[in-house]
Amino acid sequence: MLWLNFLHFYQPANAASFTIQEALEKNYWRLLRLMEEHPNLKMTWNISGCLLERLETEKKLSFIERLKSLMEKGQIELTGSAAYHGFLPLLPESEVVRQVKENEKILRKYFGPRFKASGFFLPEMAYSPALSKLVKRLGYSWIILDELAYSAVSGSRPEAGRVYADKASGLKVIFRDRQVSSAYPPDVIWPLLKNEISTGQDLVAPVLTATDAELYGLRHKDQSAEIEKIVKEKSLQSSTLSAYLKTLKGKPETVVLQSSSWESSPRDVKNNQPYHLWLDKKNAIQVSLWRLAALALSLGEKYPHDKNYEWHRWHLVRGLASCTFWWASAHDFSKIYGPYAWSPDEIERGLEDLIRAVRSLADVKTKKDKLAAEAIYLKIKKLIWESHWRKHWLKTV
Image 1: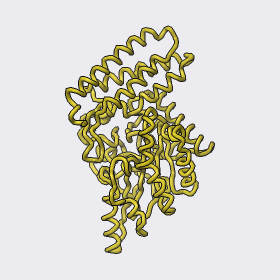
Image 2 (image 1 turned 45 degrees about the vertical axis):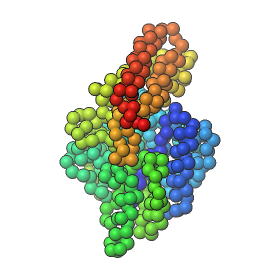
Image 3 (image 1 turned 120 degrees about the vertical axis):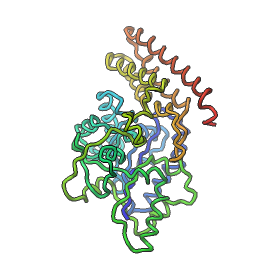
Image 4 (image 1 turned 60 degrees about the vertical axis):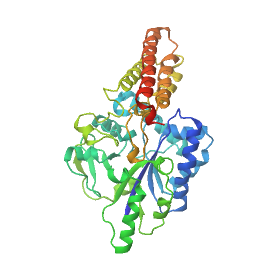
């Protein structure tokens, strides 16, 4: 069988040092060793630019060097993305372009001046037709999406082994298998492999999974080392996504896709709320966070020559990370190896960077906007802790 495995590596740029260390010890080193010990194993990875920079800050350049070696051997390909994991559908185009170009700059820093990815990962797989067109203009040739983007329009699942093209942009599209990706993929792959071995019949269609890399150790305790077991099987084949696309024959089928994310539900899409985990109009915290974010963004556009502009940007991109808003959703992901998505500390981490982005600007003309930002900031603080103690406290302990 052919297993196409896409992994997304990400830790927020403002994450605590111990968080990076924990991800390395429980997750990242394991995946790196897996690839090194199995030279025929191939995957496509996305590593956010901000995580690469944090690995350098944490003096873990050996991880990057070993990753580079695997890339040179053709075992791993990297995709493009947004450097600081901003939630792109809700950001202005100018900010999206900045974060994509910054990610490209970071990748060239670590993997060579000529490095250019062909595939692109939209953070949270958050697709919109406008974003797809922008990604195409920035020089990418394919994107990976959840199958819901297809099935919400067509009423059927995309066919594995077929090449599709997004009607909005012309980008080739690869769809992940939602059901397998929502499980721990090795638990599904192993029975399929055993059946192939016992029957001698190969599984015709490839299995395409896409998950957070952190699933492999940090979020799921794989006590029986399932992934190490299945990659030893000779009947298992693997490929990078770009190499796989080159094997597909025929003209791509042009399809209309629905705005969605890898965590959208069919109900979200039907209700025209594909991004409600990041912006629910009934969620006062999220609405106020986006109001503060819009103000901070507008000030950066208005005062690009401010003497503290670089500090403004430093804080702004950290505050705009998708997790700032996601942790305010209070959605329960325990059935798919995730947490109860409520954390006042994580929300505040992003909130503090958003307000500091405003406070950083030195121009005296920003005083009125600063006072407006402080009022929003204090409102959010109050909302966070009132919600925590009244609604969420006992659900998170």
